[in-house]
Length: 526
Image 1 (tube, rainbow, N blue to C red):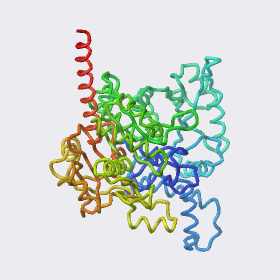
Image 2 (tube, helix red, strand yellow; image 1 turned 90 degrees about the horizontal axis):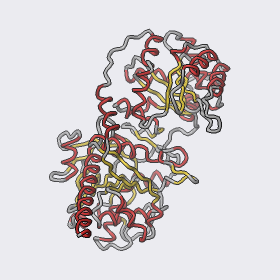
Image 3 (cartoon, helix red, strand yellow; image 1 turned 90 degrees about the vertical axis):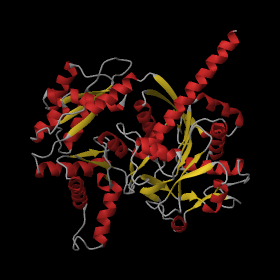
Image 4 (cartoon, helix red, strand yellow; image 1 turned 45 degrees about the vertical axis):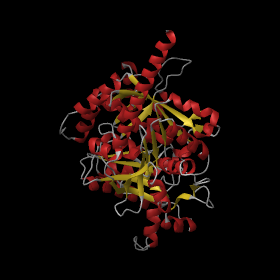
């Protein structure tokens, strides 16, 4: 099976988009910066995807224009038909790349949006061209207004009508709602859309998104799809997935994790989608260890004032994830210092690793004013600086798709916690790993000797030894920073080794703290 996401926005990719605007930017092994939905695809499929699995409307227009400029259309008049043909070519390419029996095409947005017209037109043409090989599955919503308390099917009926207006008749409807659809609603929706009741699949809210496949299996979605495509099921084995779901449901012991970042506040609400892969990686590791994750999203700005730092003791582990820019940076650095000094398990991801180096240089090595040149280009101690090739790109304002992106190998140093974790929980081949990157700045090797003389280890480097990839702190329960993004490779059935080690350390710290608290309580009672 090959998935492909068709996104209606005119950005060429998601790389230049603010996480507050569109959520997390997900990165694939081949360096493609894409919609966070591809992260969900990988987590559910347990596979790695590539550039053929994502197409934005911007990239499609750009491709057609480039072909026209290169005379690839032989001087022909280029119009909207060339856009739809480009879409069809990409759908076919996604299938060929994975040698897939089925290509699942997700069209972003909602029916009736003018941004989606060309995607819908391409799918209409595909259905005409290969009627026996194409089915349309429409995801719609049935609200339950609180003031009424009755599930309303009219919005779903109207969305199907919008599709009919552009020449598409759904073959199956996935009916999203707070609760399962009753027989009355299913029959009513079937009558109004011209479908069989069996083709109306209830998709109620679930406590855990990973339960969705089991719900669809219960609703016979797979059987309906295969029957319409005249295909036979190759196997029916969700045993490992059911075991995972059972772990999620039965996990009782809490582990409290704080994620300190800046992409959270959006008006009066919290946008957790900015770090969705980090959140999911925490869940994967916690459930694998039989723990129930309790995740708090904390705005780094509150820790600029030191009096608020004591709040961090309420958590068993702290993560500072990736990010860019100067906003709230001192709050992150203060967080890292507090975790280092108070032995709170810490995991720094990309920017979180770079700022850990800044904090260590300032407060342990005595390099006052040490910083990253991303924030302070005139700092006397640039412990983090821009990669030489990246500096040239920024001078040219060449921002899109130009960072160090995608999967790169790293060599793990012997006798380090990092190597121990990868050896126990992950894939370690001849001491090497492969992880996904997304950054322009790196550790400045001019300061490497000073760091190595202290208790901060470099536990992972690039194969040529020139780039620091992983740092860790000795004499600390867990203090690791990675230049890469391990969260991008974590999956439900294969949690990432570093997250497993982090959560394990966090729960052990929590257990010791609880035991200490109990002993103190007994002492006080005496």
